[in-house]
Image (cartoon, rainbow, N blue to C red; front, side, top):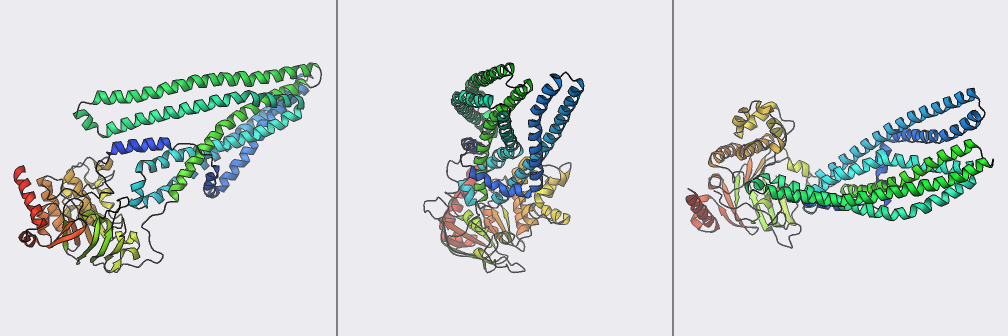
Length: 621
């Protein structure tokens, strides 16, 4: 039975905080809303440095792009020569020669197009990998203050969905757009060269025919966004239910969950059906208007051939070029949408790269003394969490801990105990006052080197996929095999590790979910011990354990304390009584301090909390 309920800082973990499934659902909704296009294409300039790193590949891609476009435009010219100089002349040798030229051009076009595809795809994959790595490098080093205003789900969405949009642009759409621009410009030039009259008529008819279709296209895009939003709702409902599947089954709500999911899917399908009908109408309209216009132009061209105003080969060349140019212009419209989406995605990723950590090393950090002693001094500290509306978590708080001393922090929920740990680990800096380790102020030290002096075990220890050995090595990657074994034994973790068929090398599942609560705590303690840090921080390490696991973890803690400065957020009297000193906190201040016997005799807050636990233990018994 705990002495006190677990502490949650009001600003960081508000009452009514959503579950992981609800949070993930909300993140999905926000991400769907933000998958918008951007008219500010200037953000794409941020991709320049990434492309410059791959400038050799970019140069080769552009060369093959020009060659492929040139080969494509050469085909109708070769076809014209075949008709005028071979077929009309009735010269079999000339026909064979011109078909050979067509074959060579087609072969060159195939080689150039394949080479272009290889290099642009390679560039896209590499640029996005570099961009993702840079964004992750920045995000993983940001302070907890950032994650209070920016959800993890949104950050992951940007690393996946937004990066994928950029990859589509760099590896496909940009190359296609450039190729079609070259094809369209070259095609228009050749059309004008072939027949100014026919080209003029075509350039008047096709744009006029396309104007009504843009309105339909906007409606189609609106329906597409609506369908995607409904699918996001369906995914949110599914994620929420699957994350709490045991609760859903325990309350017999499977059918309700199935119905809710199907309702969202049906809503998405309904919008998709409307979109498909409108898209089908738009496709029919495009075919009718565009090819109707081309047919009208070709009728004029056929009359010109009959009137001997142009050759049959010239008309064939014009037909070929018309189709190529129309296809290129149509593809440009789709590529433009990809460009706009990529601009928005780049803007969002660059916003992450622009974030600066609140806790950063000073220009000239002060070196921490060697060898470390583990002396802690917190001097007149005041601190409020961001967004706490001025409510202080610590108020004029001072605490001094001698090297090798074990101090237990107790007090009601919200007293500020966990906040002390967060300041010691430099997740936050004090608003006023100083936090010192071995005489060095936290603000003067490199935060990464500062944190190396601490080993931390949380109440709900976060473990990772992999083996027991890998989870222990997370505490210190360079630890020797002997150090790993020693830490596991000291943490009373070796018995349950060796009980598994593959021992230290057995996979423990995602986030080590195969372990029980007590096993997780002992493995987390082994991870902290292998760090061999001078200061050990234990945050409610036994509050959620049964008696047997509590006994094992308490035994491991007793061994871990030897030779280390230890601070324990203690909710168990067994832990409290073994501490060298007990510090009682309330409303961000120290209200009592002493040994268990001294504090009991004072009949203050500690005595009342201890009496409450004895009463609860008696009722539970």
